Image 1 (cartoon, helix red, strand yellow):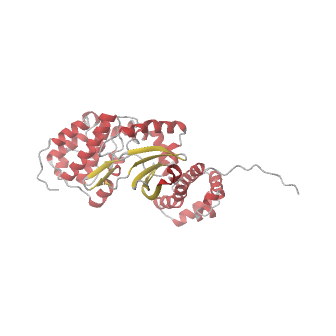
Image 2 (cartoon, rainbow, N blue to C red; image 1 turned 135 degrees about the vertical axis):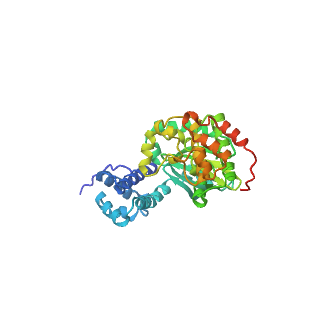
Image 3 (spheres, rainbow, N blue to C red; image 1 turned 120 degrees about the vertical axis):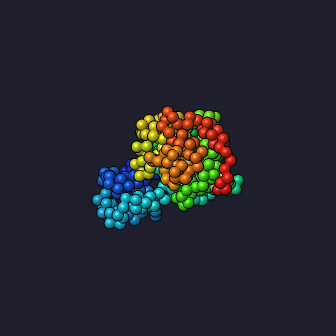
Length: 368
């Protein structure tokens, strides 16, 4: 019997496999939530995953049994009725596989011990690591493969724009220490700030007392003033989830991502099923000109956050000072806030102006 040697392609490298898993996840989420994934694409990606020895013991059971997109559809619709449940299931099944392949120890050696995932969204994950020698915690923001789907051009732009993060030096802005690549995914190593997202505080407590809200707004505004005037960077995604708070302290996070919140990149990233821009907090002018870089966009977003802290909901048609006063907002606060939410040409012009008005408020007798 003659044995013929076959030149089989080598298994994909781990960074390629991460890309395969991400494409598989995006396709299955689409197929499970009203879209579609080509059957031949599913079979190709599934075959790669099943054949990779690194994942042999970790492949989800549904992926082993569902040989086609038709099999997958019959499975997912029988198990989970809502789109949200299906997204959650797929994330829980596939994200651990990518996490295993993308352990940051591959980048930083044995100095770090992985702790917990402390944040997750459309851009990727934030993972807490403990530096064993320094006995310090750091946060690694690892971006989803979809973030670099545009190829080298997008990555070059990311690193070019990311240089500015090292110039940000303010007590209320999370400090950036390092930037690099993890497989095909960019990452940022940052200060770990053990605070709670303002979003969670608002969900738990609702309205925040005016003086406490004013203290938070002043801290955020001063951080943004530093970014605007001393570093010339506009955030463009100020919202409660990007503000971390702990007793007597706060941090603004995700500086530098604003330059990527544009139609072409958002259209790619949102295929993962996550929202990117700030919704109710996004300045109206950015919906028509996503590339606009103007400090007044951050002023609007900060005003929207302030409004929600005081009134328990994002601004809508209730943005006038009179309506805010009628809802219990202090008169002096309402006047400043209304100017933050004004249309672009009549909005408060700079963070320095806003801080001057805040600092000019008379002392309050409110003990909160």
